[in-house]
Length: 455
Image 1 (cartoon, one colour):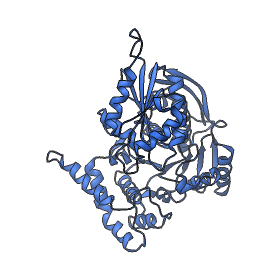
Image 2: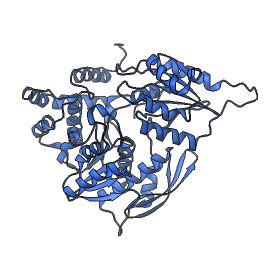
Image 3: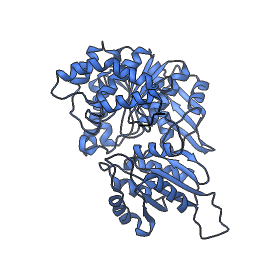
């Protein structure tokens, strides 16, 4: 380790080393017993503030960020817990719109570590890394203190560690297949698991769902005597047009219509995330037919939105976009957005996928918009070997369109060269584009390559 590294980062890495000795997020023993034992020892910090809980397969992080931005602009001090992180683990615990400092992260860990040891000593299975992080977030939010917490489910819903919090607003993003090894391949079963975040007498804000996903969610709503607001019925996107740097929206909220809302993020899916976030915040404040949120505060919150790693432009000429799509549903949204909102002369994809993901499904969605593909790997030991990914890609793209670079930085350099190649000397190079995707880890490492700070 370099001696020039700041002491706070050295301490952070020591803590991360300790946490990494625990079960990772890819190894699960479904139970809330351990996290409940920890929060009991900590005097239940998760009950010290109202909670908005966000579950679903895709769109959770963007929707949670939008909810955070709206609540903050309206005047609350907000804590947000998200996963996974793109670049630095401190991104997972946000207060006042940004990641906590490395010093605060280390302090949060050291403060609860003795209680974690007690839980470990009384359990056959020690606490996982995610469970400890969740306890850290709850405690940090109580210490701040925050006036509202936005919690993003890590995996599933019912037995996710975040579910020891009882949310007054439960947000259900679109449900599709992902993490099949943990959640199975039955959409109805997956939706039922995710609907486990719905608590007694809460308000449920539900994105548009397939019929098989909607039925178990509504059943849970009835069981919990909850109130439901459905996208496409009680709220939604009324109008959407592509604008420079994003899109202009007309949104139907629970409390009325919100006109001329600029969202500096690309993709129709992000417009639907914005409608979902708006309705969630309206529900939080009890807005309805007789009262809506202040339109100027809504406009300002959305206009200031930053969504790192979600069709994020990190370079121009050629344009380089980074997107954290890591399943077919996310890749489809990416492909639709690129196809409808950008006019690339040529688009080159750089893809690194985790071995437990549906690489074929991701590549199938990208093939419709990507002319040439560079397959690579990220730094995770779970990353698919480039040669294996290339073999799969060649079945879909053809051998002549697929290139292999074992290192991400070399893959990006290769993609830039490919994007700038043209057989016509009179053709402009400015219309070339590159999209780097396939994994949250790939997206985070690409952001770092282009000098983007964690956020």
